[in-house]
Image 1 (spheres, rainbow, N blue to C red):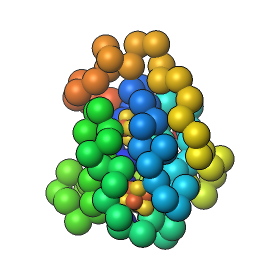
Image 2 (cartoon, helix red, strand yellow; image 1 turned 90 degrees about the vertical axis):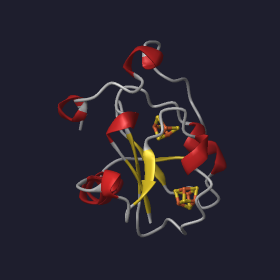
Image 3 (cartoon, rainbow, N blue to C red; image 1 turned 120 degrees about the vertical axis):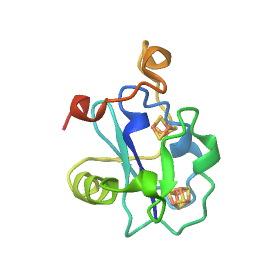
Length: 104
Ligand code: SF4
Ligand code: F3S
């Protein structure tokens, strides 16, 4: 499965949502997750993310994020349409150390 990682936090561009053929994204306040059990590994969302936040769960950059995606996919509502990104999304793009800013 593919998973969403730290780079999404406070960026939440949502371009990923538009392209997913199985609608397996779930929405939190400032982050999105993929339900790894629903993802069919098509890989289409990965290059769509302007923040480069999406990786296959086999990638070292996805370490620790599989559990986060699985957990919140069970708690947050499904999202199937792209909404507006946060007004300051570009300011947070590529910033390190955002993990503690994830709003659950
Ligand atoms: Fe959806 Fe494909 Fe991305 Fe999985 S890899 S979340 S199925 S677009
Ligand atoms: Fe997040 Fe990238 Fe989607 S910033 S909402 S994973 S397009």
